[in-house]
Length: 491
Ligand code: NAD
Image 1 (cartoon, protein in one colour):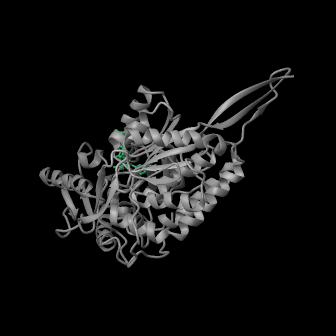
Image 2 (cartoon, protein in one colour):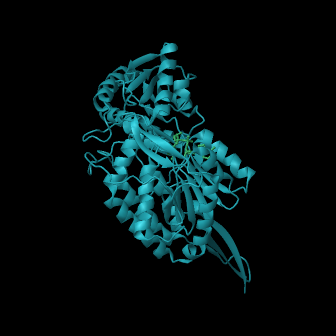
Image 3 (cartoon, helix red, strand yellow):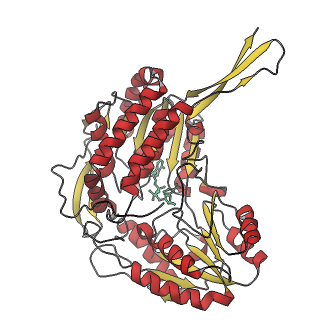
């Protein structure tokens, strides 16, 4: 995905920050009346207080989604697509507000970040896919015409993380609604504000009530109530492996709802000695610094051939130091903000302490920046043991491990020696080797002479191994939100 500057949110001040739940087309306080605070990670100051959805609010939202289902699923696909196109237009017109609210809740800079602008593009793509929901026919049985229907699940659930609130929301809402489902979506407790703008826009465009319900709240009790709900037929989750496991268990313990999971990663990037380093270095640096390293597909493990390791490491130090300086996410010109909140900051800093305690070779960074705001230096750890936590675990910060190799088979084994399998990449000019790696790397997406965040809307996105199951984007996205029925017609 290209990164470009479209606008900025500096100086933007919303007139009003919506803090209620969006149920049945209306904003309502939570039944318990409980609220939780959002702290601005740039300043560590109070940003907003938001109503916390609980299990009882989930029940009300599910009832609203049930009510809305017959009329919504009976619409023609083009009509449902038209609603999504209207929402896309509305989101594009309100992009400053959305960008500002993400900046003050989870520290994502709006400037230089095309994600918000991509939202409309993604939504229109999903709208167009509504018309591609087709069954098949078979004349292979004598005296019969057999056909399949693809039909909506009905009332569905979605639970999303904080690191890309708008885009992940759209990747659920778009295909779920295009496929004729109604939806109860829970946002992350770290970043609920921008999604409530989407809720307001649904109201403004007049989307039928109950088709999309958006709840702010914590994993427990709100997310858990969605995962366990007996009337939710399908749940799409994006987040950590730990939560993904809890969600699958909750689904199994309740109504065995269909579950798709988009989970974490520890993505390897292999750089051979014939690679174009002028291309590989900025790509590797951008991959780990984009969104302050808070990206499931970040290339957080780099394996560089020993013949070019010194050159590569020096160039990475210079490039990361240059492009990795963070700033206030609401300020013009900021391309990297702070970590999302104190919890994320503490988690990344605990890996820094571990690296120091273990005497690991920290070539760049390793520290907090300043004393206010959750800012962390761009960090390189070199030659870490393969079994160490910094190689094995998802740090979710601007921290890259750079190890060396000499043998192709050995580096392939090390690249694949992980329970994750979301994204992997290789840089080489040898086409046969590139293809060998593309085939052998155990990941749902592979970059050849490019790396994450390179993805394309018409290509499937999802994980191998514990990085998840199911695919988003592409022609496959609607398959995940529709069931197949076989119909036998005797002649
Ligand atoms: P998380 O798992 O902590 O939380 C994700 C969501 O699940 C939140 O809304 C949270 O409130 C909810 N939740 C927590 N516990 C729950 C429970 N027991 N039942 C139901 N819901 C529960 O993840 P996070 O910190 O928000 O996001 C970061 C993680 O998401 C990283 O691991 C990252 O790699 C992953 N991620 C994956 C993708 C992808 O497409 N594969 C995209 C973005 C983020």
